[in-house]
Image 1 (cartoon, rainbow, N blue to C red):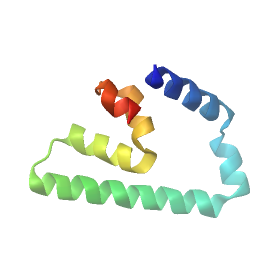
Image 2: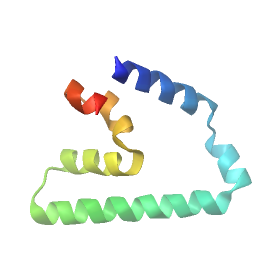
Image 3: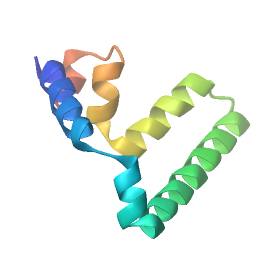
Image 4: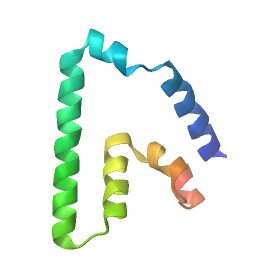
Amino acid sequence: MCCLVYKIFFAAVGAAGSIRIVMRTAPSLFLFSTIQISIHLAITLGVGKLFGFQRRDLLLASNANVGGKTIVTPSHALTPAVCSA
């Protein structure tokens, strides 16, 4: 049930969002966020490859760190205990 509520919440929030408006009103914030997330992803993939982790797991971990567990939980088959934690 909680996963369904998360999906509805993020659909509602995302429906009102617009990258064009963000780029028009705060381009430096958009650029900073893009650089920060790109560096995070590069380090995660680089260190993960060094230790031999699967790319799928590294991308899931990166997504969880950037967006939080509520972003990852609805899109992946995790146990209900993780969803309600």
